Amino acid sequence: MKTYDYRQFDPLVHSRIRLSVLAILVSVDDAEFTYLRDQVRATDGNLGAHLRKLEDGGYVQVTKHFVNRKPHTRYRVTRAGRDAFRKYVDNLERLLHSAPKDLEGKAAG
Image: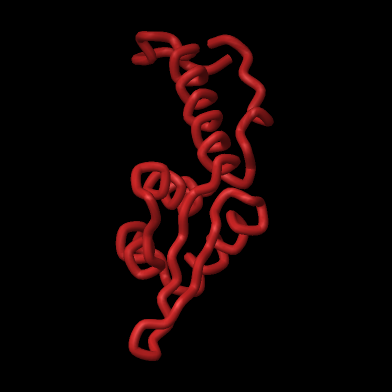
C-alpha cells in the first residue's frame, strides 16, 4: 500500500453521524430534523450537536418555522458542504484504490 496522509480527511466530515447527515442532504433539497434523526438513528441531542457543528462550519443551512405552534427545523447542504462531502468521498476512494487487491494472508509491516 502506498503511503496515505490521513490529514486529507476533513475532521468536520469524518464522523459517522456528520458523514451520514451529509450523505442524506446531498441527495435531497432539504430535510426535516426528525427525518434526519430517524434515518441516522441518533438521539435528538446527539444529532443536534452534530448538526450545529456542520452549521458552524458552513456545511449546512438551517431554517426554522412553526406549523400549528410546533417547531419545524429543516436543513440543507450548502455549496461548501457539498464540496467537502465530494472531497471526502474522493479521498476515501483514493485510499481504497491504493490498497493491495489481494489482502488475504498479508500482514502490515
